[in-house]
Each structure stands twice: as C-alpha cells, then as structure tokens.
View 1 (cartoon, rainbow, N blue to C red):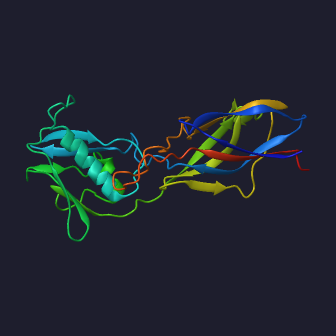
View 2 (view 1 turned 30 degrees about the horizontal axis):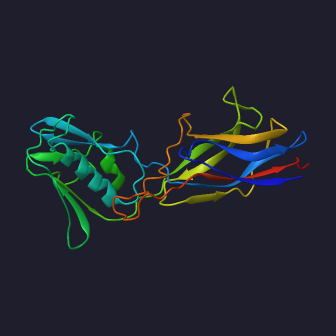
View 3 (view 1 turned 45 degrees about the horizontal axis):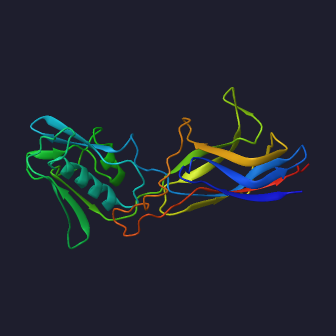
Amino acid sequence: MEQYITVTSGDSPSRFSSSFNSVINLTDGYEIAVKSIYHAPIFNVTEENNSFAVIKGGKISLFEIPNGFYDRSCEILRAAYKVMNRTFDGDYDGKRSNLKDPPTFEIDLNGRNILKLSQRTENFSFDEKSPLFEIFGCYKDTADKNKIEVDDYPLKTTVVCGLLYSSVVKDSIINNTFARLMTCIPLRSKKGYSFHEFQNPSYKPLSVSSFTDLSFIITDQNGEDVKFDHSSGCGSVCDSITNVDYPTILNLHIRKPQF
C-alpha cells in the first residue's frame, strides 16, 4: 500500500506539525519522501545585510531596515527612507542621528527612485558599513554620495539550501551527528509561491509503523530556522496587495522500498 499525503504549515512555516483525524497504520519497512514543496519567499534582507551608514562631520549614524523579503529595488530604498525619517518623530525613543533634517524620497519623471540627504555635508557610506546598498549596486566609487538614485527593478532571486527534518524518519549521520534529515531543498527569494518538484525523490525509512501527526523543521546550513516572509504581503512596500498568507506545503509519498 502506498499513500500520498499533503501537509501544510500554520503560523510557523519553518517549524510545524500536521495532525490527522485517524491513525495511519503501516506495516514495518515503509519509506517516505518529499515529492514537491510550495514555500513563501525566504528573507533576502537579514542581520547580515540590513544596515547602512550616513557620515556627517566625521560622525557616523547607523541605520537598519526591517528584515524580510523585498521584491524590488524601490522597496529597499523606501524602507531606508522610513527608518531615517522615523528618528525625527517626537515619540521616537531610539538613538538619534546627527542629521539636521529628514531626507527626501521621490520618483522622477523617468521612474528613478531618489533618496536624498538634506545637507551637502551629509553623505551615505558606500563601504563595508553599508552592506544594504550593495544589493542594488552602490559601491565606493559612487560619485555623488549625498543621494542614491536607482531604477525600479525586481531584485535578483537568491537560492539557499534548506534542510528538512521530520519526526518520523530514521536517523541519518550528518557531520558525525545523528539527525532525522528527510531531504535538502533549494529555497528561493522570489515573490509569491516558489514551487520545487523532486525528479528523483530521496526516500528515507520510516521510524514508526503508525502515526497520527507529522512534525517538520526547515533549517539553514547553520541550523537556524529558515525565515520565510509568509504573511506580510511579500514586498508590500510597493505593492497594494497585503495580508496574503503563504504557508509551506509539502507533498509526501509513502511506499514500500523498491529493489
């Protein structure tokens, strides 16, 4: 007897369980594999690249935009404008910058997005202090450091390796450690759902002969839960569509081993 099972995540797309109304009973010797997966965009802005700096009179002001998935260049630039502008609000209780006035953000007649500082003595830093700006190609040799001009374009899709663990597969040896690794999955930072189908699924032996629920964890290569942007609208800064949920969907196949 073989079975096809579809499970979906809830509020946590990288760590979830799925329960069944009745017990799934199998005899010993079955194996399971992931046939395909749907997943939300992974974060392309994280703690590693979410910061930028402004220099005025030798003093550096550091800013960080929210971590998440950003679909277009304009979304990142507008997020930078918002976090800078926020420091001028009367109820702001964080560290103040040394900027005289808030920056400006506009879109010119050619559709270019322009973020400009209020004083010529204020300059964006385009070195290692501003990894955020490398996402859309602002480097040390940028001529006018008082402003940033970028065309509005979709950001490059990045792909990372996700490690899918499950409660019902037998242990494998991973780097001299026993772990219930089910398979490795290519995960993408692409707007909306990403879909991946395994042409040659990797089957793993089941550790149980019956179960009422299945649990899954998706981590990165460092063992951290993968961060999916599954409920914020996936790039809602420049997109009017918001509050769209993208749960993780796994399509599984259970069968007797094929010899």
